Length: 502
Image (cartoon, rainbow, N blue to C red; front, side):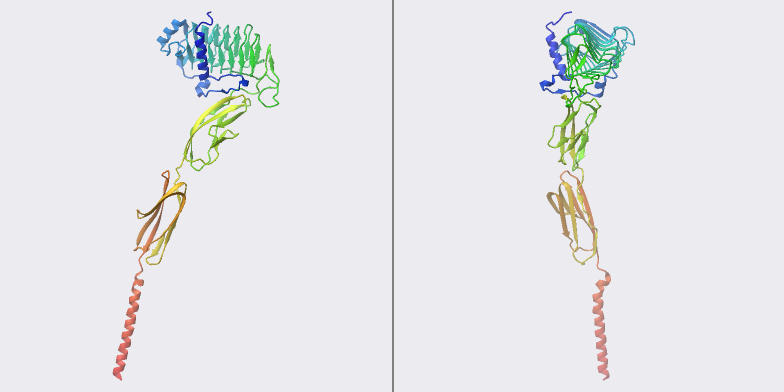
């Protein structure tokens, strides 16, 4: 096998780019760097579903890879900047001999992602098999019911990340392979070993979850040296780890078989976890991974004047490391211990973009974002005076309104639709009263129209009925004058008759 040719530096560059973009960076805790997790959609977290059915793929050499990419319509040109991309395939060998995808003797850059590989159960069948390969990136693939989920043989400078190997014999298997990165993978329900390193050195194994219960979580065999194995979770099995190599570093891993204590509550065991031929000086008491979202945050809308409360939803178990929740706008918002984002006061109308971060005690982060919109759709409140009925000439009558709103408000007063007066005071509470003119008999509509600065309007109408003076009240003075005149006439006639008779 050709080792460390000039192209391997391109592989390193590609590796850094893809690691930064696709997986959790792993650094020693003492470096005070921040480790962060990538938010993935549900299909990404659980493996690509519903891929395009495809026959098994076999590629031998760079020229064959280029020819096959052209024939299949795979994007890319094999360079570090534009790798070939094999994506979204569903390959099922159905128990026949062979591998789902076989790549031999290549140095071109390529990516295999979002694919299902199953049924390669005849020894030594693998979901993905790389032999004498450099510069490959295997990301977010699902390998089930194979002898080997993913097998790297004599292959260097490759990346295996965010993939799921379940119900295989062995999950991820490296043989005679150097300088590879195996990160953010999930291996479960495999009948053999989840991660196996045979004669493989200087590899990085980080942030993987291994939960098979029938054998070792990770096994580093003889002639495997100087591998860096940190920040993984090994659960189940009679023994979580095995190391027959030399110079391998196991540190900051979770081991379900660890029986030590954590007196100071820092999340690290007080004593090392010792296993065959090695030990982990800082065993974790919890999974190192930040909590996953049960539901990603979604945009929120509240009515102006209300206090905002939004409980976020994470997937948590007894093995979830304690974490703190924070929000970037700490002036207006706070995160409480119930994973609830609250506003510190009733917020002004506006749009508030928010970024929330859950950071566990190991420094791993889960991030999310949503936008809060505070809107005012509530019209002003106007008191409703009673309708007025009176007889013309009875005296002065008054209408008094009071209006209020959380937002500044102006008003107009209308008489039968015609504006009498208005105010642009833009205050949140206003009182207005008016004395009615002595109008002719009839029915009059006096209306108060209030409008806040957001265009919400309210109106109250008082119906004023002016009655005419009753007929008898008009006739009475004339009847009185007539009666006086008749009486006077009778007296005069009486006096005249009396004078004549005398």
